[in-house]
Image 1 (tube, rainbow, N blue to C red):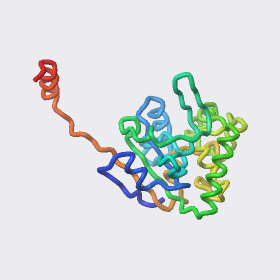
Image 2 (image 1 turned 180 degrees about the horizontal axis):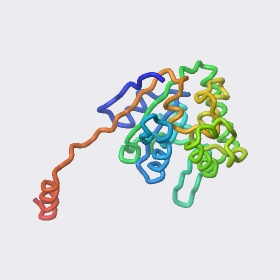
Image 3 (image 1 turned 60 degrees about the horizontal axis):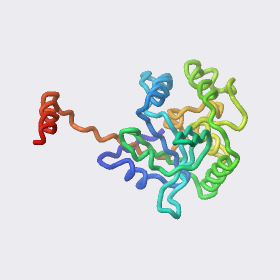
Image 4 (image 1 turned 90 degrees about the vertical axis):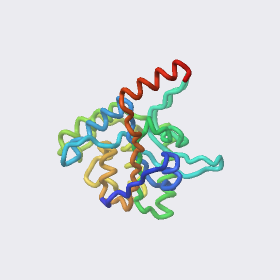
Length: 230
């Protein structure tokens, strides 16, 4: 694993547009409760047993004719009167909201043109085939994180035509002849495993911009002045 190149002082959107490219892999650390639990569960993958930075993995497909950068991901997307559960195409917009995704990374596996084409075409095939997202498989992986010997064996909660986020990424990379997590069953691959992959050539890591903490007294005075219209 190469030393991550730390990037600061730019927005999530600028970071993605600068370092993402077709076939590269994105990692995100969400701020919601489920994402925090996933990061905590991966602490067994670190020597110091520190929680992972990552809760989600996806594939960059590049900028399309609409001028937007798009990704392939296996996720649960909930919108009003619309639920999408599985492999899908989305714009990068949700990853551009810093409060929701305060940490991002781009992984470069140095894929050749043919390998990139395979990754993207396999991803499209899974979108067209309505490959599902499996919460059950995710639970099987989280349980196996505590018992490393299980991770080379098939996920006991595996379902056909189903992949959670990092299993999906691992699957399409293996289709291109790149194994990012040697020795692991595809449905035991976690986002932290991708971050620590021995096959990755470059890593760009965006550190969140931390606002200076305002003293409590100063915040209270500011609120009072706002209410008084001053």
